Image 1: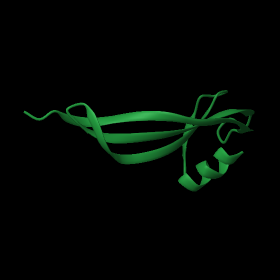
Image 2: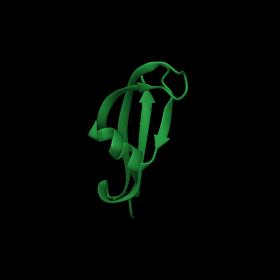
Image 3: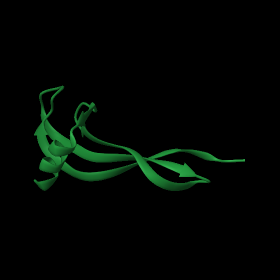
Image 4: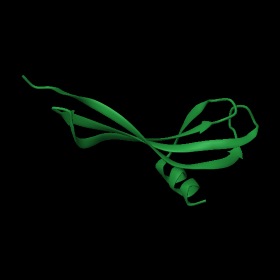
Length: 76
């Protein structure tokens, strides 16, 4: 019997004060990286997908950003 699956872990890259794309308010935006890994017998082996997200703390909407934009924002 084989036990396999996917597990996603979120890593917070930083909190930025920016203009929200949805509500238009200047609020804290949480920048995070979500890594989904393939696991075998509950041991994560290799990454399957990496996604970068920004979430507005005012309205709560989450939007996906590109890797280049996330790296640029993480420097600030």
